[in-house]
Each structure stands twice: as structure tokens, then as C-alpha cells.
Length: 639
Image 1 (cartoon, helix red, strand yellow):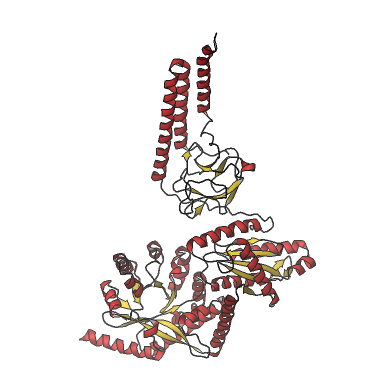
Image 2 (tube, helix red, strand yellow; image 1 turned 120 degrees about the horizontal axis):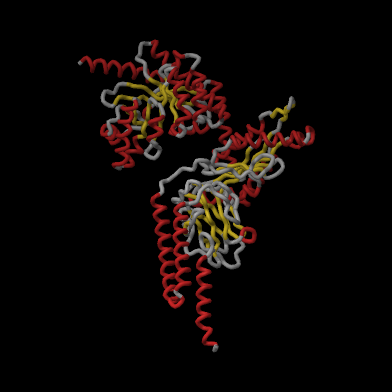
């Protein structure tokens, strides 16, 4: 037999080897060379909008992958969806986050170590573990399973055809190629349909926190590094600011050495929980050393925001800690660094906050200090204003003026806003500055109590003089739930004085409407109304407004007029109609110009208030207006 006789056999053997390779693994094909494949499984099988945000120096991507435009799934199988990440042959790993918008599969970014995990891994919903083999799941992804079963049936058919029709091998190979192309096209079509057809589902359980430190349950320095880098990235994309607060305990060594390590451990665990309670859900605190903690504050509203968080942390550290009959007392010194003023990366910001913390210790401890000298000067000036405001309250230098709420058609007085004024030396130039000064919780509570008491006293005096009762609104300071609770406690002692008052809060009242309903109902039982003020075009959630039992809603007319759009006008009319349906009154505030008054008439807003710059009256002047406007209204009605 010549060598030419073996060529058909060699060709047949080669074709069989090709077919054997085409059969592939049980599910998705193995990833191509220089590609890392990440499989992702969700219990709901809802993958709509999910993508992969990743970064690393050895990625070979065909386009820029950003938070707003992450890497899309490459395909589906019985496990779920999978992502193919092209890499350089020299790559050792990369970082990634699985997310849908701001919803993350895991709160911290994850590292894929190729030496440890290999080039194909499996991930589960809400789990940080990177599996190197498919873990068991509750149910197969039916769309992926059906697609894969269809592909396997096709491959089996090709095997049979190859065994039965050796002479038609070339045709079968052509057929395989066509079917493979069709299968890939079918897979892409089904994936596209899946992404379009699935409805958005909210996560039933929030992502688990990364609890690295065994003692406190807080992230360690490594977790802090990752979280801070992500926070900096978000601040950079959104043009925002982030604060880093370095917290070092004062007096901890005395507890640890004098009462023992068990007592020291108890102090650390208690303070870890207290520090967490001082922060928002979007912020975080980590333990980075024996008695050192670092907090990260995102979406920083102002340096004063970080300063007030620091003061809460200091107060939490000062509280006594009970330990089986003994009481431990420690304190804290805090340094603050702000992105981007004090650094562009995590290491620089942490170091800057550490430096500022040592400045706080040198200055006498139990203090919060900024790295930037000009910011610290602003905070020192703020503390001085707080001291002056406390003294002003003690000396009786504050008074209440009133901003009338007038019926647009008749000019009748329907109510008023109580506006605090400061007449003493060092008084702030504006009401906003006074309210900014009252950031300390104790000071805010004192100012709230004074305003409610003074407004009640004036209202009682006017009733005794025979003037018609009107509702007086008092702007409360401080956190919403706390302000409502303390207002109820202050007013419940004298129902007669409380009746007719309105407690007024910013639109934040609507944020946790379910949590505030019980407090609002308790105030209603005293005859006290609840108002939301300062509501602009962008501040509204109609559902929250419907579900919150308010009595008064104030729209800032200049913001709606400036919007000059059909949507803004339609929103205003809807709010007026909603007020009629839900039995709350809609008032337009800051109305000073003819154009603004004309807008109120077009929107059918029943009453208006001037701005504080043009319309406030002293208590006696307001009483005279109340009497005159009432007489005019009676004469108008009689005529």
C-alpha cells in the first residue's frame, strides 16, 4: 500500500478529531486563548442591565469600559450569563465589579488572581467568593439550558452524520460551520431578547458587608483602601467631594493596661458600633490599627458636613462604656482630609487625615481638625458663631418676626412663618447664616424650643386681644425624626398653646415618609400641623407626598417661574389638585414680582408669601396687619 492510500484515512481521522473538539465541554465552550471568562448566576435569573466594570494594566479591550457603559455579557448557559475579558499574555489579574447602575453584586471591588483562580471562574449573586469550579445552584437557567441542549443535539447529529457518511465529510464540515454560525447567532438573539424582555427586579436582600476584622466586624485597611478608591472614582466622575476622617482613641492605653485586654476589646467593639451608627448607609468606617479607625464620607455637601460628622464621632467616643460594674471612659482625636483638595488618591488622603489627627492631639485632644488651614479657620469661626448664638439665647437677644401668608384674591391673612432675628453684637447677616450656625444638636434643640415657645406666646396674646386665630409655622432645625419627636415632647405639656402651630421642615421630611407618619399623627393629635417648605421642581416624589399626611406644602415660586416650562407648570397644577384631594393647602413662597404673582394666578395657587428680604414684620406690626386685613375682609363680605 502506498503512502497515498493512507491520505483518505488521515483525512477521516483529522475530521473525527475536529468533531471531537467541536463536542466541547458539557456547557459553554472553553474560553479562547488570552480570554478570561467570568460566569455569573442570579437566583431570579434576571440579568437585565447587569454589566462588568473592570480595570487593570494588562486588559486588551476593544473599547473603553466605564461605569456608565460596562462590559456586556458574551453569552448565556445553564449557569447564567458569562463575560469574556481579553487580556495580555503577561497579565496576572485584574479588578472588577458586577453591577447594574448603582446596584452592586458586592459592595467592594473584587480581585481576580489568575495564578490562583485560573482563566475561568464562577460567581454567585451577593457572594464575594470566586469559585474555580461551578458551585451548586438552586435551578438551572432555563434559557441557557435550552440553548445549550439545542447545540448539543446539533453536535450529536453531526457525529452521527460523520460516522454514517464518510464520503460526505467535506459537506458535513461545511454543515458544521454553518450550524455553528447559526447557533452563535441564535444565542445572541436569545440573549438580546432576554435583556429586553426581563422586567427590572429589585434586590430582595442588600449586599453583605465585607466584615474583615474579627474583633469589630469592620473592614480592615485593605477594605478601606478598596472602598476609598471607589469613592474617589465616583467623586471624580460626578465632580463631588469625599472626606476621610482619621480617628485615634484618647485614653485607650490606660484602659487596655489597667483593666486588661478583654476590657480593651470591649471598648473597641462598642465604639465600632457607635461609629457606624453616626454615619449614613453610603458612608463607611474601618479599623486600621489597634485603636485607630478611618471613616469615609461620600457626597460631601460642605466642609461643615464633615466637621459635624466628626463632632458626632467625638461625642460617641466620649460616652461611658459599662463593663460588668466597671465604667470605661475614653475619647478621640480626629483629623480630616478632603478629596480633591488634600490629595487625588487613597494613600495621600489617609496620610493627610493622619497628619491632621496629630494636629488635633497636639492642640489638646478631643477635637476634630482639618488638614487645610483655611478650612480649619472656617470651622473655628463657625464654633465662635455657635458660642455667640448660645450667649444670645441666654441673654434674650433673639426675637421672632413674621412672614404673612396672604389669600391671593382677598388679601386676608391665613397664617405666617415665624422668622428668628438676632439683634445683639456679632449677629449674623442673614437668617440662613443663623440656621447654619445651629448645627450642633443641643444648640438646634434649644433654638427649636425657643421658637416654639415664643410663637405659642405670641399666638396666645393675639387671641386674648380678640384677633382671629391663624396658623403660625416654625422652621425646625436638625435631623427630621429627632426634630419631630422633640417638638412633640415640648408641645404636649400645653395643648392650648400648641394648638394652631405648624412645624415646618425641608423636603427631607418626605424621604422616609413611612418612618415619620407616627410622629406626624402624634402632632396632629395636639392640634399641631406639619408643613414641607422649599419644594422646588427637582425635589418631588409624588408617591411620598401622597403617603405623608402633611397639612401645608410651600412651593418656591421663583424656581418654578425660572423653569419656564410646560412640565414645571403641569407639576404645579398637579400639586394644587393633589392638595385639594389630600386636604393640604398649597402656598407659593418668595413671591415678590408681578410675574411671580401672575404665575400663582395661572396655577390657581390660593395664597402667597413674600420673601424674607421684603416681607417680614415684627410681632406687633403683624398683629396690626392681622386686625386690619380681617376688618377689610369682613367689610368686603358685607358689601
